[in-house]
Length: 310
Figure 1 (tube, helix red, strand yellow):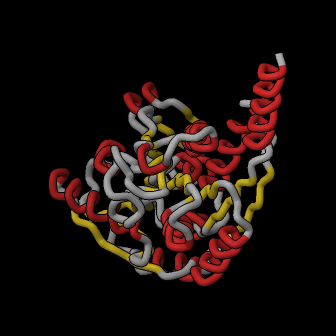
Figure 2 (cartoon, one colour):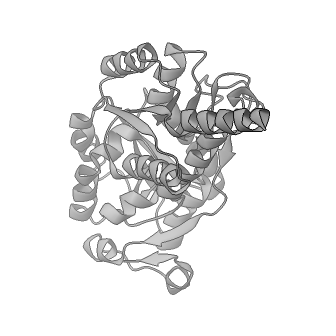
Figure 3 (spheres, one colour):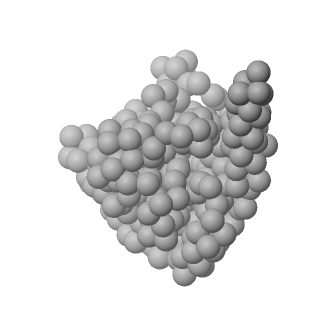
């Protein structure tokens, strides 16, 4: 009987340790997609009945601040780090090789140097990728504006995730008979100028899931509305904000998926053996109000297949 009571007490103690886990959250910048991923992560853990203490820090786009935040979380000996977006994930992975790092909104974990391969990470990092169907997103442009031949892409060449997507766009453009016109930025304050540089040179604009550009998306939206150019986005939150359309993932659900993975890690699974996960369901999102402002007529076949029409 005493042995049974001791085992029950041990189980209760261990359960308490998991329930009281301290999770550090590091995020490169605030914008709706990344915020949705964070909220989904926290909601999933809450619904599973875990009482978790969070330490949330946002670098507001500053890389040196990002490194400082990562170092502080490691010094505080958190039980797990949620790193949102590629720069955050790279900072966290550089700061520790022992604390589990769960990533989300990271396009290519291998190219970012975070894991050895997707099925067997081999490091203290695992989580979810937000790799989007760039080829299908560019194909939307041809469906919406068949005459389009020149597509402008605005991105930060310093973001690994954006470079990966631009490379995918180049492959897709060749197959679709499109010419890409690239405009790069280094910070959010330069997004409007980058958009302006495309004036008279493109028939449509594409913005991948680039953290710098998406944080200042309103500048691109205003440019496209003024020049009557369709704006295709890399993710759904951008459509909610005023981009024309996308075929993409749901960042809130991606966050929840990451939260479920984090719980497994807290219960004892090793990040190094936990495969990177992807979101299988892609939604066609169309903003009809944006279509009017950009002078675009959406084909009925797309309207019928849209998951969300605003």
